[in-house]
Image (cartoon, rainbow, N blue to C red; front, side, top):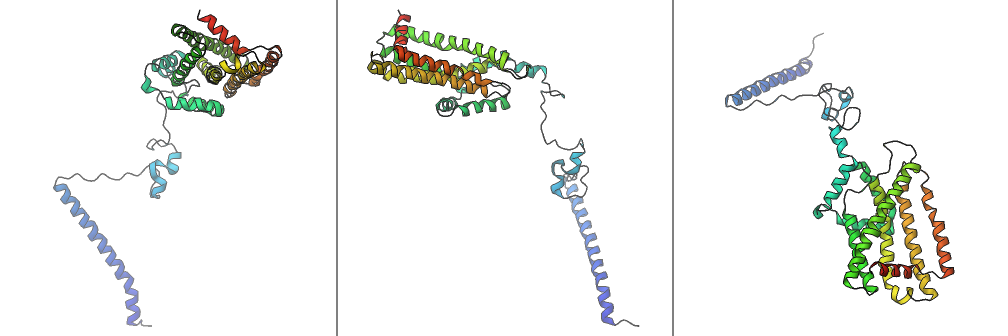
Length: 337
């Protein structure tokens, strides 16, 4: 059977199309080779060959980017790492000798004391935020201590801005106390030195050391070097708890001393002793929050037991007519003689 001319032309059409594409491809390659040779002759550098990560082959680009895909799973040495390796740590995760020296208590203490004389390096805005939340939400303050442990590998503060602001508050309130008690200039300065270095720093060091020893001796779940309470953290807990007590007894109470509290009436020692109850109770509560925030401590609820003794002493003082604020004022006047 003889094929018609129309059928023969339809059958030959795909072959002709393929020949045209083949010749066009050859002409394109020849033109690119000529252009590349011309650029080389003009002194330009040849383009760097495109490298494909090992194991990618002709896979899509989204699977071969940054050494991804299955090739990265095989641990090829040519792949880019997805996580950075700490150059200061050894292969087993132990810090090197230089980095271990930076994490010692002496190095942290030296860094803290050195920053006391560089006010530009202190974050006073953040310290003011902490002072505000110590009254409204103390848990948020200790939540920040968790963040510091995760980022800087220490629980204690590394910024003395809070201590500086607390000292300023203490100085201002003590001057106000001297004004209310009709003290002279030198008597007020003497009272200020007593309050700052004895009541705040001296008693704070004693309480922090005592709580540091008790928590490490009896409250740690597992006796391990990696699970211990830092002394600096114990001192920070004392400062956090001391600030509300300072504001209540050395600032708010000043407005009621001469007109209400000093009087020998029942209302006088009721208002004064109630302020003492609130201040000391807040100190106990903030201290409890500080140690309960540490995940490796147990039985921290025993730090709330002094509440029972405090309430009992408060009721006895009301029954006997004791005025704690009047006793404090007499003690301050005896100090500056």
